[in-house]
Image (tube, rainbow, N blue to C red; front, side, top):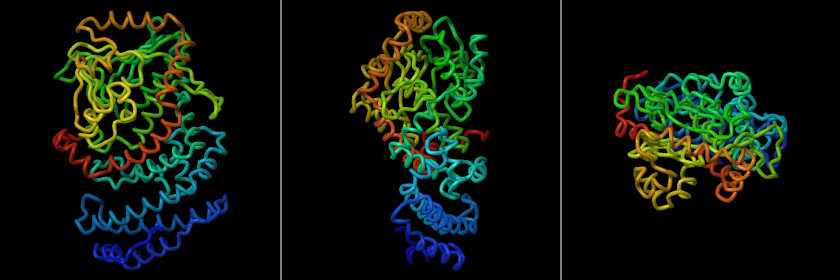
Length: 474
């Protein structure tokens, strides 16, 4: 049980907290005893008691200056409060995540995406997850200036994935086509192309081509790309005239590489440092955009105990320049990789201070565990021509011969039809990453990524390795 110790109470008062507010917070913590038998009635009663804890903690935090203006003693007091609040939220969610999930999804008859889910939970159990207003209040702040209200979202999603019934249901929800994709499908089928801003999608014969188009940032991924890229993937999978997909970068406008096609520079670290990348980006990306590349689209019928029944197609990746971070992660879920000679792949997430998506369980299948540890923990770069690079790329072609290589690969993969390709993808995936393994990984990932994103270590890493503080604020 979470208690405010005498030492912690003294620290809060030393930081300037009103003694009455400290006492109120302490009593709310003492009063929180979750029911031995969980029912709908106990959920409401325990939520009220937990709500008193959240309110007491919020009152203490509100009495101090905003995070950048706190002195060391106030910062230590805020850390105590945040730690106790996180522990209470996790204990409450661990006990009630099943009933809460069933309540907001109407006994799993409604499919809510991760972002919809956490805000529905905020409405049902105020304080367990932040409201949209609370998240918006921190949106304009630098990452270092945020108190990290979004951590509660990552923690709650982690608890959802721990529970098989809820976790499987959320996985299915995240693999369904986006409403925007359904609305654009007729236009795409009619015109053969859609400009989604930071992503372009075109139909070229039986090949559906998705082009990364975040040109200013060397085709990095951020909050402006995750929706367009997922929509583009949806359209390729939904169009019955398309038999396979292609991922490729458009020519960039960056001065160093102007006019060159670049596959991906990974995560937009400028947006991360400047607080413009919400925590939900990470879960949404790996469950939606990347999840659909690997697992395909889920339909309306939900059969959690049956074999996967997704609509999927083979994917080709054409790597020009480099596939850094998230770009490298994409190579682990596609079916065929063509790399330009001289290109390279790496996963600098450890150097940045975050977890590199689902790469920790996928990369060992390609390069082995030892090289995976070097790549993730020691920032090793794999050149296309290296042994590890050749494990990630099916072929390496000279500059200027990428178009011909894509044409050959597309002809080879579209000859057997979509049905058998999808069936074989499912069969291959079953032996390496069954649904339960992925769900369990996401339980860990959502919690750990939340901790990493709001860690002071990440800020220091970005300033040291990325010189993020020197970049102009956007």
